[in-house]
Image (cartoon, rainbow, N blue to C red; front, side, top):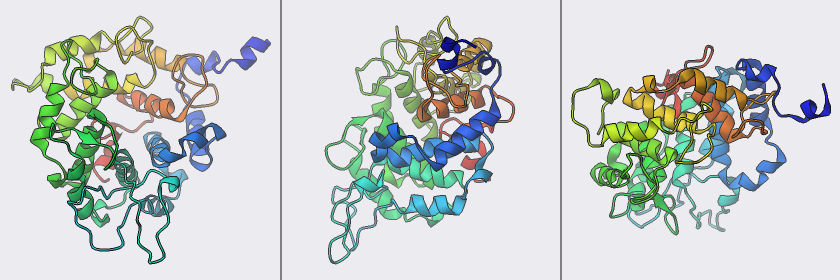
Amino acid sequence: MDSTEESSPTSESSNTIMDMDLHNTFAELMFHLLPSPYESQEINHLTLAYFVISSLDILNSLNRVEKDAIVDWVLSFQFHPGTKTDPNNGQFYGFHGSRTSQFPPDDNGVLLHNHSYLASTYCALAILKIVGYDLSNVDSELMLASMRNLQQPDGSFMAIHIGGETDLRFVYCAAAICFMLDNWSGMDKEKAKDYILNCQSYDGGFGLVPGAESHGGATYCAIASLRLMGFIEDNLLSSCASSLIDVPLLLDWIVQRQGMDGGFQGRTNKTADTCYAFWIGAVLKILGAEDFVDIKALHRFLLTCQYKYGGFSKFPGEFPDLYHSYYGFAAFSLLKESGLKSLCCELGITETAAKGL
């Protein structure tokens, strides 16, 4: 082997099969200790944990971790006001994303600084479902009542109670939270639906906000949210029912996202990227349109992004990262790779976790 081959993140053998043993080792290592480049993402600690723990679940390897310890750790991020609180005071009482966003209480034990974040709350509840925790034990009444404070007049959601963005990502988080808690009091579904429909672009895809460029991730958030809220049926293409969205136009946009290399791009004229194999693939799965994909070509592309020591990179020939590794595993689950658990596309967790099995 020459020096060029030695330094390459991939090798010939890593491009022929999905190496389950290496991926299990990679995910387990990430669970116990994240590499130093992730220090800058400490504020998203719960999200990183979601990628790792959901990866282990897809890989059928949750037995490698202590579930009770995970539950205790996740629940420690939930914000509990020290006194009786008015849920209509403009704040959101969910989960913090990390220790650095949790300020210590005052001398009386009262938490004065609330930085509960909508995406972190989704990740927290998803992790709890993955490890089999009964979400009826979560103090969700105040969480859901206060979540309505984040919904804007146009139906969108802010991520945090002050100074946050509003777009489809957080509409999805709100819908997934309500679905997992089996309680829709936390949002106005009709307003959210109208906002989503306003985000469908002229070319059929969905932008993050009305008028924005169509994007694979935004399109997933739109379709998954509508499915979770019950506004579109599963396997929509096999039904004769009319649809809120322009399905033919959407499908036309989606199928054009698969490139000559077999991978999916997130936007027009962009390079194919591992994560969009999930974002786009999940939309096709929800719509019942998987047959529109060149599965063999997509499979080959994903394997070119497989790292020789486990995990997946964003592009072929690069080093792996946690985000793209998780969505690589999720994409292979959608492709029904042997040994992987089936995925509940609209929730972003396995079917067994979604059903509480």
